[in-house]
Amino acid sequence: MSKDRILMCPPDYFTVDYVINPWMAGHEESLSLDRARQQWETLRDRIGEFAEVVTIEPQPELPDMVFTANAGVVYGDKAIASHFMPHERRPEEQFFKQWFRDNGFELLALDDNIGFEGAGDCLLDRRGPWLWTGHGFRTEIESHAEIRDFFDIEVVSIRLTDARFYHIDTCFCPLTDGFLMYHPPAFDYESRIAIESRIPPHKRIIVDTMDAGNFACNAVNIGDRVILNQASEPLKARLMLAGFRVHEVGLSEFLKAGGSAKCLTLRLTEPVRGA
Image 1 (cartoon, helix red, strand yellow):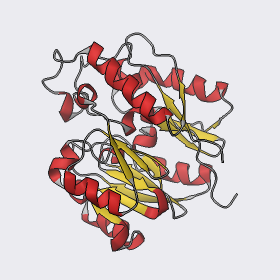
Image 2 (cartoon, one colour; image 1 turned 90 degrees about the vertical axis):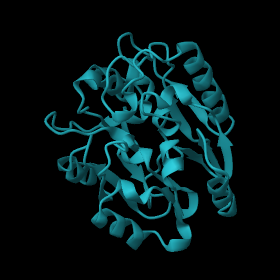
Image 3 (cartoon, helix red, strand yellow; image 1 turned 45 degrees about the vertical axis):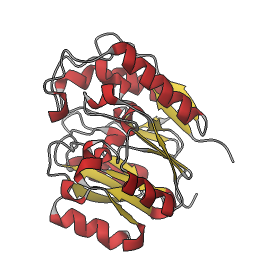
Image 4 (cartoon, helix red, strand yellow; image 1 turned 180 degrees about the vertical axis):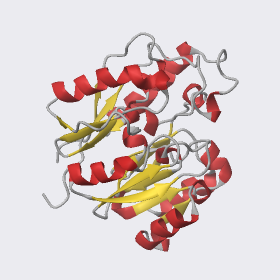
């Protein structure tokens, strides 16, 4: 079985010099690029034990390009590149689109008037034949029908209500064999019903406020491995009982920008269901 391929971007130009989410406020001058680089390399090396890591060239003046989860979303040999809501990130789009084209992906020409932020808000369930797709802050619900039609897959729309969790991957992590690690208070009532109607109780791993604030849900899952910034002992025990092995990689510098392990990665191997 071939290894998963995961896209990352070195943090050569990473900084916090604007505020586009609540986590960034107050951190404009506090980031250590040397520490960030060390943390990124540790994450890359850990992921590289279980998957093939490929990289995209970082670009000057684009500090958030390091968060490749927002490059777009991949399904089979198709990709949808992001159209960012914050204007500060829009210059990244041309580089990600070109990368997808150069690497053989068929790209959807998404309407530029529709906000869509890639795999930050678009996550395949790891068992069911559907795509969990967020809206509320950075991705607009108008994108959901286009995603469904282009990928020919069911889209389950879930709405975020807490600005600290501005993408679903900050508070929602589908895991191998249909498990789901998530923070329910980040979603509205109808979305929680949608989640609970599809994920049976024994497959739900509920993440509390403290773990959610440490970005435990923003995890990279490869097989039975879960790679994340930090998790409490009870959460680690729950994951281990479900059959997962947890790897903590400190990512403090990236938390200052509102991102963690999952935000720093984009899974490029998403086989079409039933193919």
